[in-house]
Image 1 (cartoon, rainbow, N blue to C red):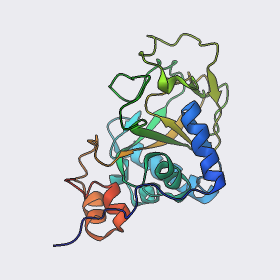
Image 2 (image 1 turned 180 degrees about the vertical axis):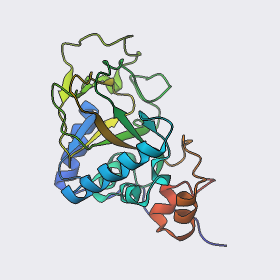
Image 3 (image 1 turned 135 degrees about the horizontal axis):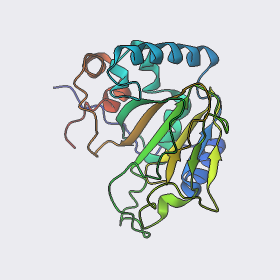
Image 4 (image 1 turned 60 degrees about the horizontal axis):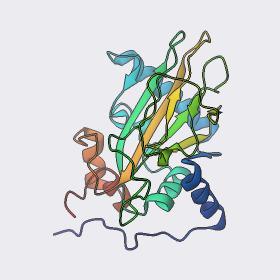
Length: 247
């Protein structure tokens, strides 16, 4: 019987640069990763996402993104992002979901929200299990005041209460104007929302969400891509796609 693809060590060794990124993320709940994907990869994702939108019933959300086109596959274990995910969560990381969101021209401000359903304890858990889920957005269009930034409240990932209803302004809120090639990582508990798209063009983002591997994932990992990876991928890829079913 094959040995499950457990990593040999939970905590990776960090370079000084990665350790600085981890400290920033833990304090503020987000991180902008420079040069996360190349210009060629940006164009590849744009083409694949536009085609997926044309095939789908909904032009706003695409779920199980990795099953749509092999051109999305490299996002699963993209090194600049995954090494930071592992630096924060540990090496036992699993994909929670892979989605895309298209914000069309004229769409209004999104409401403040968190991506996780559980309440936050300001003292954490006895074994320090926070954060448990980290999302990562690869924005395929340069964000500006017209097409709408991603709006966050730095540090709110540790707030012991839900975000307010609607989209009122916070004095400390920050508008992140991501550029193609960058990736924006944010704690699932961080208050965030998308700003209104007042431009004449749509705003596109691929969202790769990760979690500790013993948490339940949103995706079933039962499509052809997931099955292929679980059979023939690297140990790391197998774990990312839920190959470890028991701990």
